[in-house]
Image (cartoon, rainbow, N blue to C red; front, side, top):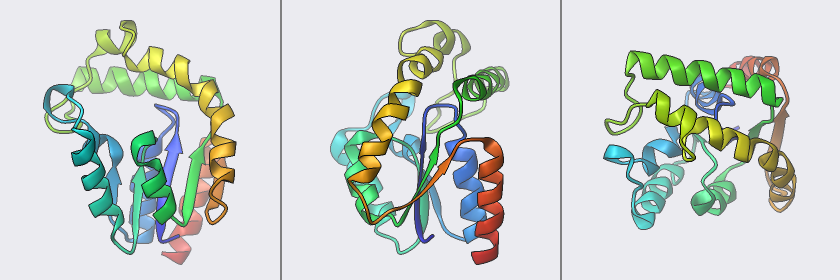
Length: 175
């Protein structure tokens, strides 16, 4: 596990797991969201986003989390491992709701000065909660063929948060 990408639907725990794997493996970590979201939630121009991801994944060892299709081929072609967080909908929904409320109340800075906005995330079409309902089950259908198209990747298909804990424990022994 030298070049690891952590994927999964919004709220599944990609960043949390990537952070733990980065520590366990003693490798640098990045969030695709940090490369994509500029100030005021503006998306980075595609060439800038791609350049940021390219520079990070050019390193010999890393962990990155995210699902952006624009950079998927670049990342997956360089990765040796994919960790797919494929948890049941109720588990992810609870995690996402708790995280969204906490971040909104604490005004935690995410990337480039951006902060979660509770009402927007709950009630607008582009909010995290509606996004979860639009994408969770679709990702479960779309991910297996995407992975099959990259046979060089070692895939860890995790179906429960306890599987992530076990993976981090195993990674600690090889890191």
